[in-house]
Length: 149
Image (tube, rainbow, N blue to C red):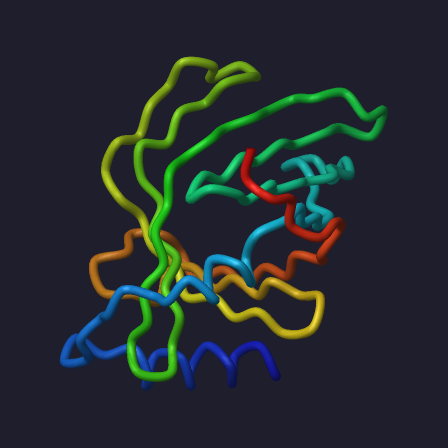
């Protein structure tokens, strides 16, 4: 029930009349690092998902129950602010491991997000023109950000 309230609140906040602005560097520092969350396959087998964010690039890796890499993709991204909502926009996505290796998605996709303590809260399917179904994900901070090389 609480998730539905959050989704409803975000729907009210993210209206087409709000103008997006580029996010300041502090937002990029806040999302930088390695994040992790649990998921599952369609048949219920557990998956471990890691996301490494640095230098305006995101790499997502999915591991099966035995720790085997089953999927990896990378994308460039940019951050924006819309009033009180942060927006993560990723583009130039390329699958780099797994059965869909080589598949590309050049068009941008967006989701609302929030960083709170050691959580990266991601809400998909709310922004205008987003074809994704509504989905609420919580990532947990695994490591602090690394300085760019």
